[in-house]
Length: 431
Image (cartoon, rainbow, N blue to C red; front, side):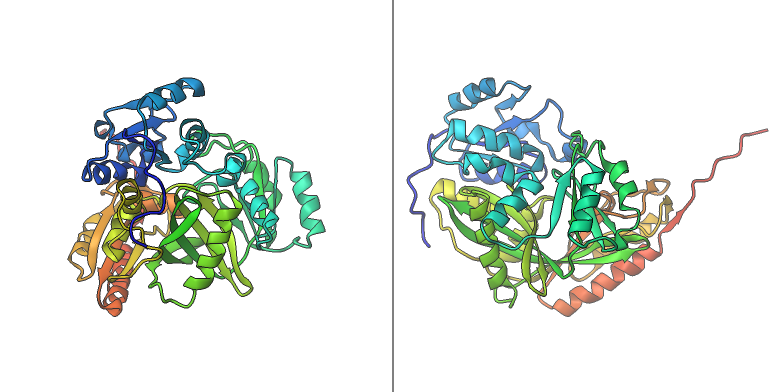
């Protein structure tokens, strides 16, 4: 499709990004390159620690701080004459969903379904209500209620997942093989403070499903959805920690899995009332077909749009900019080169040494980008979730020859094994 079949976006003022952290920080440069101003709304005076390093307040001439008074924020944002209101990352989703209908009612998602675009329990309920398959689950604050549900569903002794209804980057997500001691895990996790500083006052108890995990990134306008990229995750066991992220591989649009995933994901977006903006949808491809893991009403995080641009020539950020400037909005994507993200893993906790061996990664033929956040003497935790992986670092491998990527992947894992990870030794006091 060339151009867009929508009227021009309201206002000639800025694109307002709520919590412009993580990939949301990329909006500023992309919009500025097309002469579109930007403004920020932030959900607190300081960003969550997980996002602090990505925040560039100097990129936003106007920064509105939400301090609990939504009416005040609405007045300030309306005064800017905004073109759109979008969430930059997961911590901004709830406020963006509340703000957009009050500022730009013609350019927002369905307000009545806002909770289904953030709360994973409400999300699954909305998807199930639309007649789509979902993973069996219960959201509760009561372990006794969870026990009764497990018995009723015949899941006692089965592999389970316990996770918060509001989280990101697998924060607080725990797999329980055979359901062993699930109640102790539940009691330990309930009331936990998550990476956004919120209390996990309810937990989802969920059947563990197997298959290939995919991420499907989309951009929507006027309730019409388009495909930006599809990637497949590979997960491995890291000692007792199961399903740790190993790689994320970009799939070509003609991969056999893509059509079924696309149809299911577009139906999911309709079910949760998605009409405008970027969505990051994680799906498990099971033997019985795709089922929703969760959806983020915001761009794919971790700076992925930069790497997606390298792989496909496009990204969710770019499509947002083109919508605002009347450019082309394709319905799908093309894969220009093979590309894989390799997530670093630490096999155990301890003080790390010999980190200079990782410098070799930058000489690999398929190396496109990498970040390693460890120096000799740092403490590294055993990798148990995506937060740990991202804190350690990751590598983007990109090359016309997919076999070269595989060779370089094996080299990265071999280099990791050369790291010295041991217990911190105390320095003897001088006598």
